Length: 347
Ligand SMILES: Nc1ncnc2c1ncn2[C@@H]1O[C@H](COP(=O)(O)OP(=O)(O)OP(=O)(O)O)[C@@H](O)[C@H]1O
Figure 1 (spheres, rainbow, N blue to C red):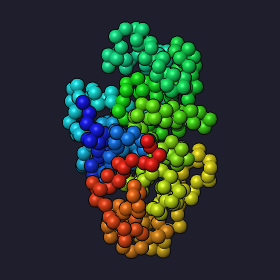
Figure 2: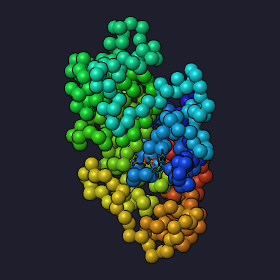
Figure 3: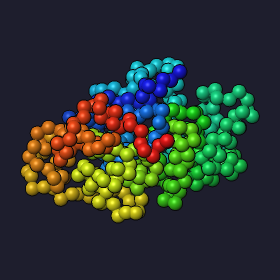
Figure 4: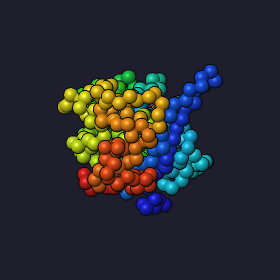
C-alpha cells in the first residue's frame, strides 16, 4: 500500500558526474546537488526546461533508475531506487513509465503496432484472457484519442509520428503508472501533431491522476501543459514555481533571457541559444560562484564567491540568484517543500 504522506519521488542533493573515458581526464558535472520532490497525491505536470546540456535528460535517467547518482539519493515512495532488486525493481519499472523523443525506435517495423501493447500485458500479467487483453488495449487507445479500429492491425509505418507517439502514451497508461517521465516527447513530430500528443498526456494526468515530468527545451509547450516549471542551467535548478508565475514574472536573469529570446507566441521556437549582454565583470574561467555569472547582465563580484542559495521570492516561487539576497534563503529540504506545494491550477 502506498502512503500519501511519503512523497512519490524525492531527489536529495543528487549529483551526477560523468567521468571521461580511458583517454580523457575530463569530467562533466551534469547535475549539481539537485533536490526535488514530486507528490503523488496532487498530481501535476511539472516541466523541466533549460538549454541543451543543462542536465534535463540526466535528471530523467536518474529518476528512471537508468543511471545512479554520483552523490545523493533518488527515492521512489520512500525507497532508494539504487537498492531495488527483484520483484521490487519489477514493480518500479512498471510504476514509472517513460515516453521518449523518438517513438519510431520503440516499434519493431516487422510487427504490427499491437505488439508494443501486448508485450507489457504479457510481461506484467495484466490480462487473464485474450478478450480482456483486447479490451485493455482498446480502452488505452481511446483514452489517448486514437481510434482502435484505425490503429490495431497496422504496421508502425502506416501510422503518423503523432499516432505512434500516442500509442506509446497508451502503453504507458495500460500499466497504470504512478509517474510518467516524458523526455522531449514531441520534439520529433510535426508541429501540427504536438498539441494532440501533449493533450493526451494532459488527459492521462487529469483523468488518471498520474503526475508527469515533462522534459523539454521548448518553453511554449511547457507553458501550455504544465502546472509547475523548473528552469535548469548547467546542472542546477535556478528558478522554480507555478508556471504562470515563473513565465509571467521571471526572476532569475537566465529565465528572463530565455523568455525574452522567444518570439512569442511561436511555441515551436527552440530557445536558449541567445546570449545575454554580460556585465562588465571580469569572470575567470574557474570560480566557485554562480555558473551563470559569465553570461549574466546583473553579475557582481560577490556572485563569484559561492553558488547562490535558493531565495524565496514568494510562496511557491524560488530563484537561485543574489539579486534576492534580502529574501529568506532556503536549504535543500525547505526548497523541496516549496516545489511540493499544490499549484493553484490543480484541483
Ligand atoms: N553519457 C555521458 N557521458 C559523458 N557526458 C555526458 C553523458 N551524458 C550527458 N553528458 C553531459 O552531461 C551534460 C548534461 O547532459 P544532458 O543530456 O543531461 O543535458 P540536456 O539538458 O538533456 O541536453 P539536451 O537538451 O541537449 O538533450 C552535458 O554537458 C552532456 O554533454
